[in-house]
Length: 312
Image 1 (cartoon, rainbow, N blue to C red):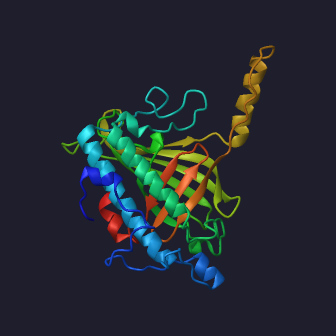
Image 2: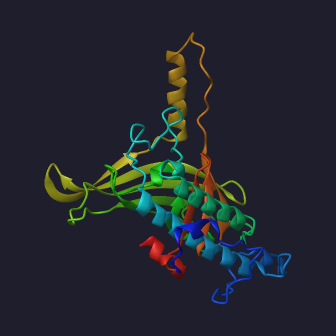
Image 3: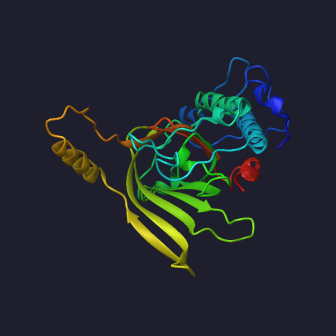
């Protein structure tokens, strides 16, 4: 990956004005619209869709690199668990959306540039039905969503980690088992500089994934698994399983809260369904937006060589 100056972050040429670089390989991906229809698509300048997306993906990595460089210079978020830590919204209990402008104006502009590129990618999505075979016991391994996806960029506070927070730095990934219709969010917390392992080593959240359209996946949280490195001061790895309230339990909580507030004028609240919409998907890159309007950009490390340095 070429190293850019910070000023280059806001002057990466758009795909419409610039021909694809000679080093960009034309890569045709499975589940593409052109394959499904038997035709090839092109933009106004005659570029094929695979060439456009390859160039956009290169720009995306450059812009992510710029944002990380700016954060090293200007600082990073300090987000901790729960409402007080800035992870969860006090009223909705949904993940907060981070504000990159709170770091610096340059960081905000760099994040905007990343989101601009994801919008362009969404307009050139090669996968007509991202949810194809999700939950299919026979063909799940052929699902375009299937596999391990590591985080490149997000606006979600609950998936944002840094060294200058109490919960510490971490790496997040998302493992889709399409055959079982299950998604596991995995957070691996980093050791300290002296090599000491954190008390909470890993957090897994297991979620049922149900396709409710060509691009939308409804999520039903099953349970969380926390892996600890110490037990009452003893150095011993052990796991704690935490049941996550199902929609039925959530509705009961809301129902009883209304009973206790009987006679008071209250706003009617219906527990929102958790879901995400796939905006872009190929065999290397996945971009989706959650029901809380948080953006996630994820990559397959074994399939996208250029992205590996950003996933380490």
